[in-house]
Length: 409
Ligand code: CTP
Image (cartoon, rainbow, N blue to C red; front, side, top):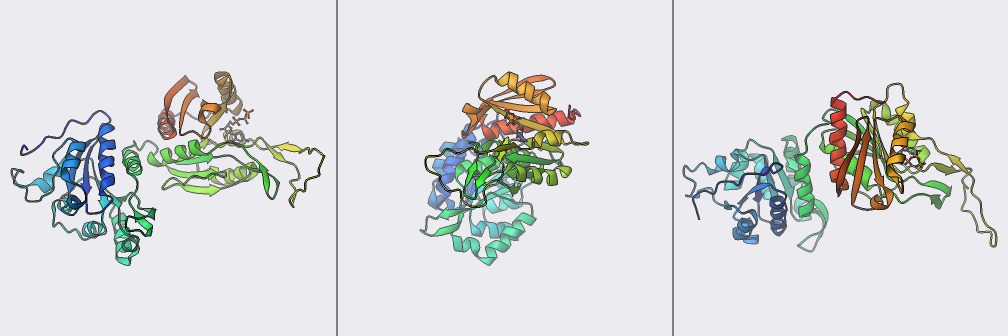
């Protein structure tokens, strides 16, 4: 092995990351994490504590990262014994996964008794920790004190999650899955193009009550709206998400307001919109509601059909776009046919500067999507990709339009 292995040049989108592993059974997940990071074009230098080496070997991490793995503060291969400074000097982010309770305590105290804790103390880049520990260790008052001190010190925490633990117990402390930590890292590196902006997003379906146990709703999963809320948050915005009924988790750092009907969504938007710089209407709002919904469960009248009388719901997006001083409005259109014609007509009818259109049959419930943006300059296809990727591109487009000073049409 050579004395030092120069870092491979990072690709255009690739970042220089130092991945630290401390002792924990979740270390096996870090093998997958390093693989994902390298595959995405990132340059990953791995540092392992002695305890981490008892769970997974440096050889595994070396093979997957394609670089020398560092484990020893006194490694004679480092020419001037300044490894603790050099190893993190050119890095843009240090990620410690798994991060043990002991390691977190050391960071809080500023202890530097091994290579990883020493280079964390000597770092000049942000530190992200993915905690991994038994639930009682996590719940312990000492760990909780350390968690709040780490946050105060600006250390980013990715997780932990609740669930089954390797020790057989169930509770908080499980390390996030490699895909989730990868997502946190990607989020960290997103351009902060909406910093200082307040973004209001509607998402999901609405449900219009027929009686207390029945409603008219639609097949929207809410995934696209939640992805937009997440992407806006990643871009540095303060985000409020007004959501119809979904089974989705609230994106980190996003304020969520739950509603059921279109009328409730309208009221919630009216309350929140005055503070918004950008309004993104992703919700599949029901165009109609049931007139005189029954207060008690409707009983079946056998042999007879049933007619529901429907009244039109307010168009929330059109209302916001018509305000005297509206936020920058973005509409969505999910169409089953004639995408271009419908999208252009909808953008003009709602008088909004930007409309995102997609085919409903491709998008409904799916994890990926293919959006085309329509604005004054014409159409901008975003290509096919995950809803989060599409949302990030949409947010980038909105930020660029805001920068150019585009206000509502
Ligand atoms: N929208 C809204 N309030 C409504 C209906 C729609 O805010 N009552 C918003 C949606 O969130 C979306 C855009 O308007 O951003 C387009 O929604 P869509 O249902 O496609 O448009 P409609 O005007 O209802 O047209 P149609 O249903 O006839 O296609």
